Image (cartoon, rainbow, N blue to C red):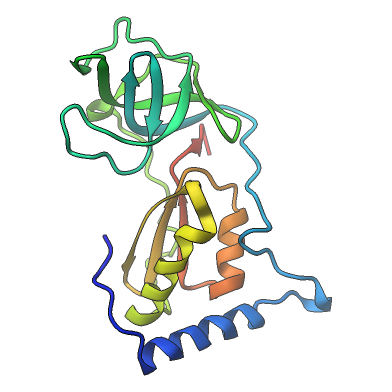
Length: 208
């Protein structure tokens, strides 16, 4: 998803200047500081949520991996601790040694650290979610390649373990995170402008 790094030249310098200008321009009236990465923390959802990914069980240590999965055998990934999980009656699982895994849509609750399964999962190949409306409204973003690459390079450090992946497309940087209640989208808008970054939450509220 990430392109090759290129030496920082005049274009890249200009991009950083633009990023700084966007942050200053986004300051709230009256001197109230805008939300910023490292200050805001998304509030965990109160109700039921759903997430799709790979459930990886290593000798009883079960994780729900929402991001990249290494193409090894058995696969490897780093995810959220998954409580309340049972393989009884679950189809689509594979096993190798003490590792069992499969790709599912999992419904449950999330407290900001642990995902707790509350219902039988749906095999991911059979999951048919309602597609949300495009957050961009089909409009191109304001970022150029140099700007989006600069943002892409710095966001993993700002988001920490919540960062899953990102890619530039149509002037936008699309950023996948574990969970966002809108706080990180607000911070991205304040830092880079409202037409540059789209934050997408891998965990979504049921009915949301």
